Image 1 (cartoon, rainbow, N blue to C red):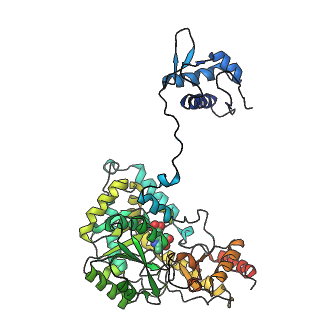
Image 2 (image 1 turned 60 degrees about the vertical axis):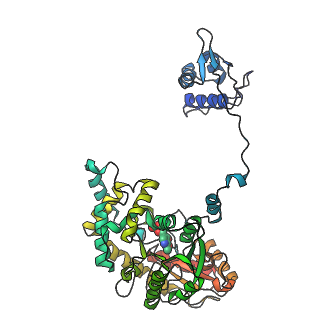
Image 3 (image 1 turned 180 degrees about the vertical axis):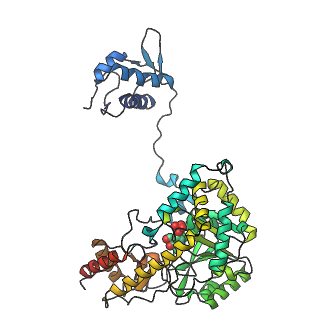
Length: 488
Ligand SMILES: Cc1ncc(COP(=O)(O)O)c(C=O)c1O
């Protein structure tokens, strides 16, 4: 039952919901009225018995609310004379500033212009992009290692830690990169981050001055472009062909301070940067004194032969910054990634991170270190690669032969998603929306281009499908639904 009061002093509109802490509700209602001036300083409040009757609650409840207001200085008592609202110096409520004032700072304006679209937050569905087979994560092993860490943590690890991250984890990552990926580095070059996105953001914060030109693949990973643009960069889209980023086009743009790219498996087209392009890019960096940010988000997923060595493994000039993530091997919500930095930059990146957040949470880092040290990580990578390959095979087998306006599926040698071209933007949008209506997710390729792209509109059309997110049976089911939705 809700009670409403109409009184000479303004207690009108107080509504108390039964069963939800009546004293607290009354305290809040009175405090709000005192603060906004509806109960003026000096107003005498009714006696607690009277108030209790008016509100239909116990006197004890009223007394508790008044005691709290008294303790915080909102009301004062005069002996034998009841309870009065205290005289407070109140700030008159100011009208909200117009939006243009609120967005006065260039940083805020840039943030508005480069708004990050958030990925879906529900359980994975076919054909969600950017999600590995995390249904296969060994949660029991992880839980056991977590429990072991927290049962008796070393007190030395519970204070503030190294902003660059847990040393043991950094040693193990360095060993993994050396043995598993052919990238020689020292643990002191590694800075642990909250995923690849924070690693990219740190590069933007530390290597870019407002007005600098930053080259990004076009089409490409828009969230990386946003991070650079928000730091004040002028984004320069560089076209991508079957050999990856066109380094000649980068050279033609001229004056770029940094290039961000995904050499192992270009996001989203899926091509791999060829060796001649890799060498040309390193030569560009040397000549121009430019930085190369290599995002190796899904480099472990290669289905013929071993994973490719990163571009950073070829770098002799200390111009490449390597970005790695555990999000595509474990699961994205873990928020664990890392940077491998030229030695001269490592300390600055760690310091910048300390300013943001001191360092990452100790438990996740320590447990990941144990997970790697005990051999679970390598086993898990093999399992994830097998699962992604089998899910890829299912999609390739089930996919309809001829879809009007759609190119056939490409060869898929790497990664967790594939991309196919579509004749026109209108056809792309029709296919994507019919799929969504049938409960099947996919992204239009047109969404991965920079807004001022030169390429004709229809040349930007395509479909991007993640194939690793759900097991085979769900892939079969999703393709069946697509056949119906697309009337094939
Ligand atoms: C190309 C690329 N880089 C980076 C990321 C972000 O990775 P993280 O979740 O580790 O921030 C993604 C996520 O989908 C991605 O597709």
